[in-house]
Length: 240
Image (cartoon, rainbow, N blue to C red; front, top):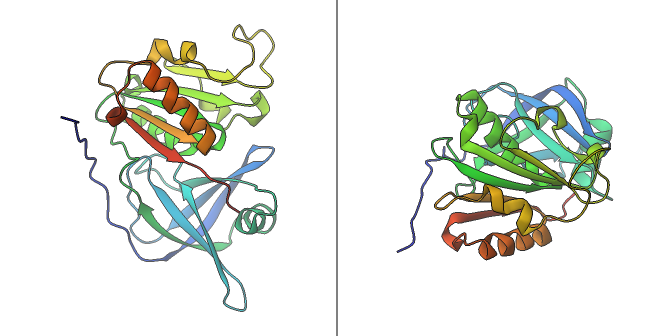
């Protein structure tokens, strides 16, 4: 019988205002926004929030972004990749700064959530690292760094999100187009050889990235003997 692992998650709450209290350039094409919410917003690592922008004429546009900060830490952080012709991401990058206010709703999602109570493997591609970064930070904050093994695939060092924190035991970096000088692995897509040393029997694997990345990683994990019920996937599709 398949095992069912349930992580209790907070209820979805109504819209509330969030004040931007910090903006950080994460990569040349991504920014992290620090948000202060006055109302309740407790969440579990891996969950996401909906950000809504409202124009003067009342028009609304909204997009979902995973929390990148760990539960219980203030302010709440979300990282936004600027998408070509993206309506919301372009506005956030070009027009939103410290002191501005956006509407936010959440947390949302229970399947891709982790409470730092059991060891897991995380596999991230590009901007898909955001919810897994929340998990890594949660594990470190709980004094359980060994519970989180993380494999991150990035095109180049310049496009690696949260680079300053991706170090230490249990972190593996894979570069697909350009690697740092002296990198022993070289460049290339993630392979079974990259994952085999970190796969453990009975350990859930959390996979996040583009649909193509998630499908490829799922196939690799399957080839390494990871059962489907131990693989949780969060696909990031193009959105603006």
